[in-house]
Amino acid sequence: MIKTIGMLTGGGDCPGLNAVIRAVVKTAINRYGLRVIGFKDGYRGLVLNDYREVDLSDVSGILDKGGTILGTSNKDNPFKYLVTSKEPNEYKDMSDVCVENLVKLGIDCLIAIGGDGTLTSARDFYRKGLNVIGVPKTIDNDLSATDTTFGFNTAVTTATDAIDKLHSTAESHHRVMILEVMGRYAGWIALEAGIAGGADVIIIPEIPYDICKISEKIIERKTDGKNFSIIVVAEGAKPLDGDLVVCKVVKDSPDPIRLGGIGNKLAEDIEKQIGIETRVTVLGHLQRGGHPTAYDRILSTRYGVKAVELAVEGKFGNMVSLQGKDIVYVSLEEAVGKVKNVKSDNDLIKAGRSVGVSFGD
Image 1 (tube, one colour):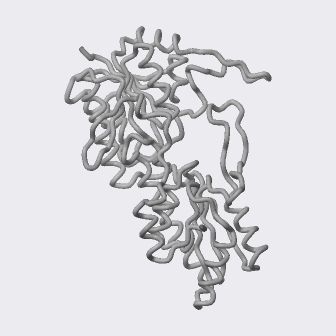
Image 2 (cartoon, rainbow, N blue to C red; image 1 turned 90 degrees about the vertical axis):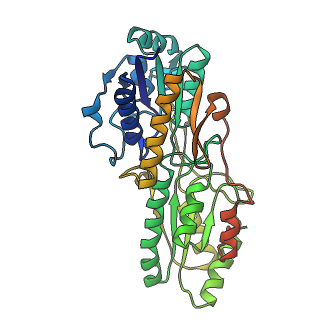
Image 3 (tube, rainbow, N blue to C red; image 1 turned 30 degrees about the vertical axis):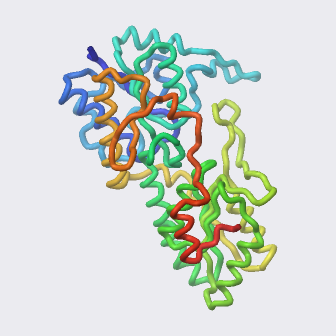
């Protein structure tokens, strides 16, 4: 019988995290009379036994707030935990310490809210015998076992608003305007925001681009009397026979590669090739902050409720998932380790081509 639920938010912050926390706490307490323990700053809190009991007053008024009241970290893998940052870095498997902390607190099930890294650790804890439930979070929408992750809709809305604003300044100055968005190795944000914002060129990781094709599109528009162009590029995009543009490498992170800079490279290449002034806006962490959209608030609430239901029903080792219109669940084994990329026959790509969008190919 479940009496106490543990909960943490791991990885990058994301609109809708607080909505999930709220749904977990309210469902656990109001519907089942359970106790909820929240670990601070993701798995770091679990390693250090840094926690707080979360009650109804703690989640009052947080539905519309960005970020996470529990804090988060994208550097703390409990199975390879950094114990000293002096060179050379020393790592240690702290998973047994985490298990001990959970046992001492009387936690019957841990709900891990996060992306692929957070959920991979959740799967590994389940393999060790812990009762674990996962909730899929990432603005990148690149988890393969769910149709949509919460936070994605908000990121797309933020990027679309930026494109709308760039249109007026691009048209006024007769410039090419490039918007660089997040997404890592998947192009979902660029694709959906680009279509919604009426971009002329959309560059995504799944379709390596030819700079000549992009230039042809800009010249074609200029010939038609349109003296400006809007380009949306995903941070993980790369040219034909070229490489990703890496902003920096963070050595102590489980995923050390930080992408960024493709927008500036693209602008430089366009100006060099066709001589049209090109400006770049890097949207960056604005996509991860702010109020979640109505869609993400609803999806997050549904995920949080389902996670508690699975815990009470003893269906451990699973992740809640949106399949069509239904909230279901899939095994954590199935949920992690595979990136959901945009396929070349995606309906949005077909629609984009039909209305004249260039994908740089």
